Length: 252
Image (cartoon, rainbow, N blue to C red; front, side, top):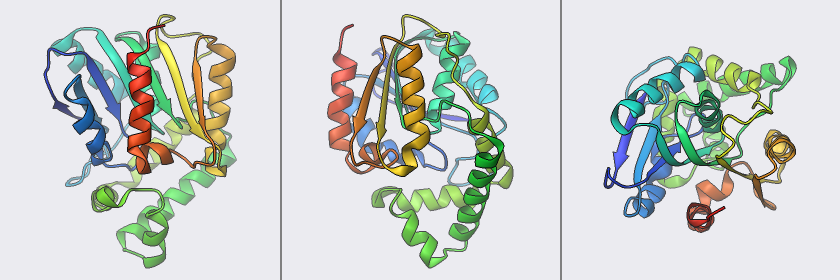
């Protein structure tokens, strides 16, 4: 695990957590915008480095490592966590561990309900195949991949894949497939927000949103109609920043 920090350390903490196979540079525009008013903390999960390999073991292990660091430097208080896709599993683990006192959590397309073994097998096969072909710079695979990662950090995305081990892919997919958010809040004072799209690759996200809506009565669900998985966050950052400004300034 690595932690990058931006802005005045005395200000309220905004933690950003990337998704599976995403480079930390996916947050560049968010860092530039929010660093003036917040201390921005960007967490890079093991197995997602652009210059060396390291196996991702589990979300619980990564959570403990980050919590230990954060508690030793800043104490328990966290103003907000914004997590995209798989990063939401880590954010939810922080929340349920209760070691950190988090005021707001914003999930974006995060898989917070478990899937069956068949779906897990399909997911694993897909990512193993795409990762291998991306390393080979297969033309068709690269062309398709550009639909899911912005051009300005696509080279960084490929570097992450170049160093990602099979063990990391297996552990990440297994962790996501078997994770289920508890129906008992980790901290009832935490404000929960969930963003998702409506296209077919948001099926798990929509199930997760329904689960949160059912079990967390004070949660806020925001649907981006016609958008795919984390599309607004990645390809329309100005729009997402407007949404985040509303959440971060909202008093409930």
